[in-house]
Length: 338
Ligand code: AMP
Image 1 (cartoon, rainbow, N blue to C red):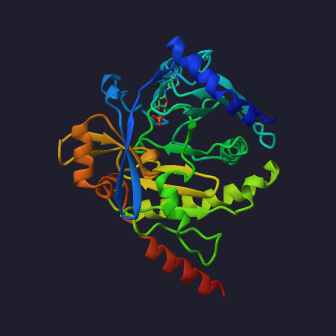
Image 2: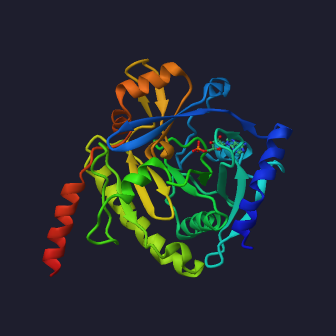
């Protein structure tokens, strides 16, 4: 059994134990379906979250003074010593030697929500590296072997909805069809399977790559070039989208990544929160929102979200799509090369 399989196999028992001990706080919720833009969005209503203290967005800046750096490390929940009931094990990338610690999300809205944190501190503003992609994908493969479905996501940068500055990818279980946005991606007919595409029915910039259908059964050692090439092509496009927005704030770009067995999605971000027209309150959006899964804390917030429209909210925290211009530029580049 691989380390990934062993970690997933212990989730049910370990989750019960972590919750019973009080080290893991579970917030029950109900899921409401909401049709829009050809997507069946899931809006999760979780009133218990009103009692969870909202963490301020951390200072992601790389040039913070050394003293603050020390303070940050002291308050880093993803650094050792780990809470034994939240600690699930470790995985190591055999090619690059990178190590990851797997922890339960301490504040769980979804049972079995796990975090893959870098063992050495790395910044949440840094892009996904080849071993990050491979190790996350291996969890998705291990889940499939166990008859379960998970997807991975990454909130990169201070406008992405991340709340911790220590690099962490996240994995959550999902129903068989996958996250709502995946159903839209799956329906897109592609002339060239290995070219980036965009979901044109949603009103925000998004960049997607279809992964080869053989990838889940590909040897782990052969995953790296395929996942890395997909990510770099999407990151290039996300940066090109950001550059076309003359008002984008300075600093490294923020974006969300959603990874399933079949697709990789990268969505550039312009803002962390959207001010809801119906309540005047801020709604924080992270990669889960762009996977098609939003989280609200009250009926009132639910009404504000459905009344305003999920598309409007996601466009509010994302960017305008410039996919058509990018395609024409790419084709002009190809013609020049020919
Ligand atoms: P993000 O907010 O996307 O950066 O993800 C970080 C996640 O870490 C959040 O979902 C928090 O619930 C979770 N979290 C915060 N503190 C801890 C902790 N001490 N142990 C485990 N998970 C934590």
